[in-house]
Image (cartoon, rainbow over all chains, first blue to last red; front, side):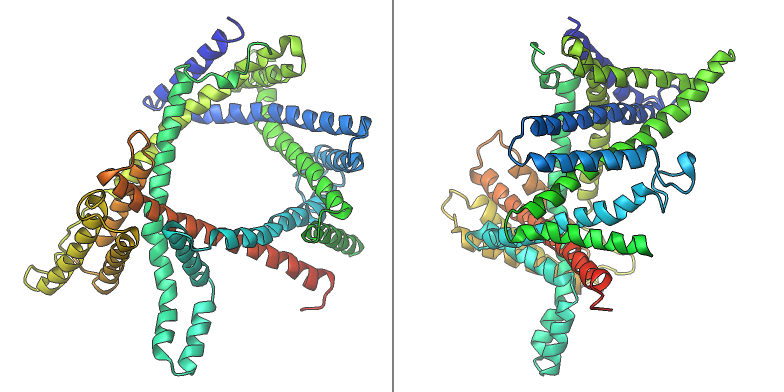
Length: 234
Length: 281
């Protein structure tokens, strides 16, 4: 009972109260949604402590057992603890422990600017190459669906850069007026694709997601969906 | 100045380390990657500590407890509940009583389900449907029936092309007028081009063709997501048109993703050439 029934009852009560609260815009129900968001944020910090603990456990275990590439686990742990100490104790913060954690001049801000930001930026920038490789496979016009995707992506890529006007200028200079007109039309076509067929597709996806979320929320509140509780053996 | 220079060199070293993966997986890349994992975990941990635990919990709860000792009840004392739930979450680390962590998890799951149920219903379903169902025929007051006759005739023609084209696609499936898929696509493109031309060159037109296309795109897109019925006949035709609209959306998203990644890459190369090597002003 304590392990399964009580959690299901808690889910039902909390979920139902928050749904009902939306229909009663008065105290104490009016602010329940915001209060829950604050509760959520606070509980999330404790969940993050679990995550940090798990990271340490995995990497300490890797170092202890001398598994493949265990040396890099030391680097990970070092990076984690240095950043953690710099942030928690606000090392080098010009305003001391009362100052903002991201204040300029602190070790935390320096690590963020000179290590975290370049690493994050480059990691995502690296995806440009993999996207290029994926584009080659995805953009082969094998069937109608792939062709539409190809045309839409190509027009968007072209229309959101200065390329069409430069190409149009080139054709205008060469006296090929119709090509210049065609390339000048690309930004307008891009806007139309974004505002009409793209909007329609996005709305269909959004409505589909909403219907899925609503049905899943109902399943959770009514106790039909219980997988988040894990197995009884735990 | 000195620390800035060291920072730039460290940033350049790590940037090149990550980029070295383009050659192959190597120790330099693994080193940079390991630092990234550790730093990002530490960064989020410290940020959440100060921005959530300290600013939202401690800053509210601590004065409330002090007020309680002075015999006054502060509403913020209710944050004690959040603190207790958070501590219960940590009990997962003690296997014999780890099941207690299900209770705060249930609060989070139930609360999120309750909030999302209403929020998604209102913002992602009702409002989107409301924005989709717009008047198709509107007569601006400045244009009378007679003056706008030419515009009306032009638009009726465009509308007719649209209906006939979509009729072939939707109703022709598995019937005597069933057409090969490329022909259907041809009709579909003609309809889209007709609508686009109508939109561009007849801004005061009484037929809201843009709204009509959006409605049909949303309708057909939703039919594609309806898996409880086999996609044949009218249903299959509509699902096919829905797929085409979805492909345009995916193409647009893909285009934007490529652009954002390229923009990041340009930013990193800019950093290397301008800030680090200073070979470009």
